[in-house]
Amino acid sequence: MSEPQGLSRRGLLQLVGMSTLGVAGVTAAAGCAPAKVDQSSDNKSGAPAGKGGEYHGVYPYLPPPQGNFNAVGKPYVGAPNTIMIGNPYGDLLLPPSGYYHWKEQTWELFLAESYQLDKATNTYTVKIKPNLKWSDGKPLTSKDYVTTFWCQYAINSPLWSYIDEIDAPDDSTFTMKMNQPAMVVERYLLRSNIISTAVYGDFADRAKQAHDNGGTESAEFTKLNDELIKFSPDKFVVSGPYDIDYKTINNTQLTFVKNPSGFNANTVNFDTLLIYNGETPTATPLVLSKDVDYATHGFPVASEKQFESIGYKILRPPTYGGPALFMSYDKVPEFKDYKVRQALIQAFDHSQNGTVALGESGVAPELYAGFSDNLADAWMEDDAKSKLTKYTFDQDKAASGLEGAGWKRSGNAWKLPNGKAANYQLLYPSDYADWSAAAKDIAQQLTKFGIKITLHGVVSTQQPIDVDKGNFQLALQGWGNSSHPYPYFSFVAAFLTHNYPIAKNNGGKGMDFPLKTTVPGMGTVDIQKLIDASGAGIDEAALKKNIGQLAQVFNTLLPIIPMYERHGNTPTLNGKRVKQFPTEDDPITQNSPYGDNEVSLWIMNGKLQPV
Image (tube, rainbow, N blue to C red; front, side):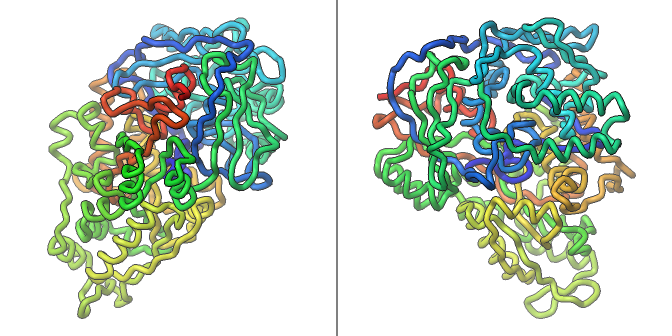
């Protein structure tokens, strides 16, 4: 696995959610105030230092014509199948304002010189570093920030639920005014890849006009949204230290080369980055031949052992999520009963499932709060955690729960209340080695329990689209969020990403789980509003209360069933092309590999050095 994400595991990166209903997100340090800035990457553009060296990575992409160079919206919602942008290496082409240090809760700024929140007016002000340039020779200014965020409006960015005004008072100053205090805004503001006005300015102007003429419900907006998502420029206009050598793009690899005028062009230590294309089956032999220095895929345990035997060091950073079992409530309505889902979560051994997939890197959750156990202490009070059911592997309880929902045993098999056999097809991404192993294991466990599971593997570029279109009974997709260290984003993944508010952008209803529903002990709840509340305000106590309430909703209803929580088993090769990668004792390795990636950060700020 290269990256769990929103629309698919990659994004996941990358995707946080797209909704016209008012989606928000938590985006600052765990306290009330904006996160501190204690480090800043210098802007040293100009002639590259010519230090030499070539870095080798591997990450999946679709080459043209399936892949495209439309960078709008990244790393959040945006155009599908964008080549490289929206994954860690893409930040070296189109840098954001900064990267976050997850453990230390500080920002390391890139394009931004500084940022500040005026609490009296709910306004963020970003000062942009001087002398930044695009690869077409034009200066990078605050107008490009305006373009970036109006284009995000045009693709239904969740950010616009919490802001209502952006401006560029001068070329080096950008302001973003919130319509209410919300910690969500900081991360959207600082982690969005800034895009060029020369490429996207017309779309931005039309987005502002649509905003002023009726908003997202207008025909004008619908047309703009469709055109922007389908937009396919010939290449990127970049501002980072690298550009793509477009003639090198093929099915197997592409090359990044120095962008001489780009941000930190003479700070980065590698003249070229060779990025191989592929998921785990392709990446594995490349690692074994030592053609790759670093890979974030979900490698099987046997491969991991082979890597160690030839000299790779394995990093195990938390990824703050993992695979989950999704149900189409339209195709298999028997799962609409939450008691059936509470039974199902206890019917298989989550520890076994994680071990089969990833060895010691696959860990059974304890809280089932809808977000990573690793974040629970920071975002939930003890009282809220104590209210969560600790689901454990117990097939007797699972059987009792199914019987209470009207299911009946027939020999070694279960039958539904209508007498139909409990037989289901499980759709999974066939090129994810870890998820493939997890799919096979859960199919075996549930079939043995009496719920027959037939496997149907589909390549990862198509499988999430099938999920969004509702073309499945059961499916694997991601829970938690590997791109952002705040519970809000995980709740988006759980309730919205592959559900009708966002799946409609891929032409379907996804799992079709109702967002207005009844929760035992809580009455009727509006989950959309609860998600918004989990990102609203800047008061830590209030946020924890809202997050605890939504965690209880997830824990009770289980709209999706987390299988295990993944830690990385990331091979790093020291001494061949790269002198030294970060080690486990470095706080930066607490960053998720798929959000503020530690290696991309070290390339950008010059800490990663060639041999």
